[in-house]
Length: 409
Image (cartoon, rainbow, N blue to C red; front, side):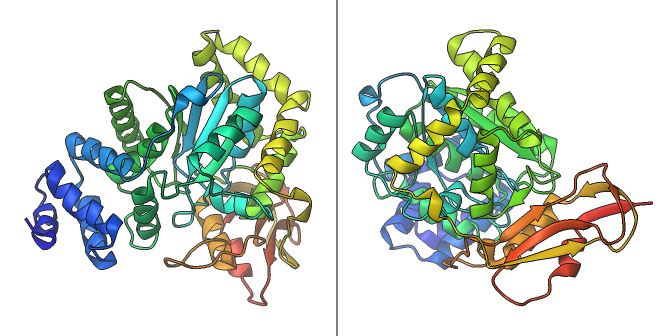
């Protein structure tokens, strides 16, 4: 069956065999299938879904597009973590050093931003000199040296996923559960960790908008993990509001460092929750004891030191990180109580500032973004600064920024 017939078959909602999926997806990987053809199939999948067998077969194909890690070379227990994406989500940059400080090995393959949600690789590239492209040997060397490493997919690691990932972000096919599941699990499985924590973001600022969709995605990934004899631990977390105060690549790196240096709040709380659940499962200890250990390495500076080692070993110079030249305050037009901050609106604002991709191949301005200055429940007076916009142009985005803040009398 040809490519057009396969696309048509999925368009009418029929199940594709592994050989049919291979025809299109591997063809796209080697360049014989065009962007517009793959876009059509991705849209058909987004609309009509996939069976679990199709999703598992696609995961297999993505893994087979590259090679897998030889985990026998890793000294220690390997764990992994993935977030399904959200506004201001920089938990990996904190959790990885925490796990490394506790003696575990966390090696991650991460992606770039999808839609309004940022990507960890984009955040890391905001650090001058940071090397996001690692060979398998370099990956394992960094992992053994520091205990935490993170890099982008390369020709060695799930190259097919990287190509699909870039296309999904600009074709309206980001929110497909089978595509999300196969993308996440292929990256997790190729690394080879035995314990895989999935932070499933749910809400207006996430790829997954409803709890029912999150449960469906969680169950799909658990079943894929079982097929590969891996333990998948899903945790559902709220993404109706931005996670932390900073949204934007360089800004989020700086906030992650602040948490590692002692900053409290919802971001640290989430890291403690995720880390405690993962550590308790690995060490087979109760949650209270695991929580104490996670907090200990955050409080005594061990995790911060690991982060600095991680950046240094991968070539980054944190002292040279740069923010946008203009810091524009956004002031309230009214008095009242800050009832809500819309994660999706903040994400759209960061995108408009240049912190994300409007279309495939767009360059990102790593230094732009938003710093939220007020929190839910705060008493607001007219003229109070709600947030700051970091920007490198002269465009007035005040109205767009104010839309994110819900203030009631």
